[in-house]
Image (cartoon, rainbow, N blue to C red; front, side, top):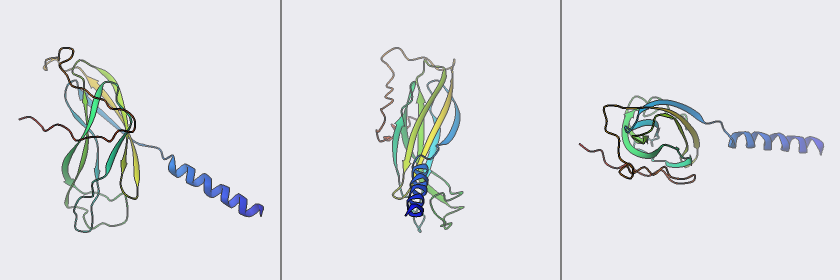
Length: 162
């Protein structure tokens, strides 16, 4: 009976450790008032069609906002399973974008989770924001920065202006 209890305890400990996985850490530099990519999510089916995940904000940034944008890239590795069908092919996915306030310079960070149907990946981004003297600084109330709150789904970015 003791051996069974010990085995169950070891399994529970491994399950707890698997749930509390350390986040992948991303380090980026951004110019104040200019967006920067702080991650991406690519996953596909056997026909190389995109499987779009849900992106969940877990710790919002203090000095900017986060959104997601469609993008395409050459698939380099499959982190979800062993299927290598689409490696080397262009696939669509989501890019996570950080947009710092135009009047801010310093450190910011954001945490989010990429949720696929059978796997979740924790991400943490450290962002060093530098002043951009070439860009005009927005006056108070002119900038629309909505950092969101923990548990929010990361929404689509506004379309790029031309």
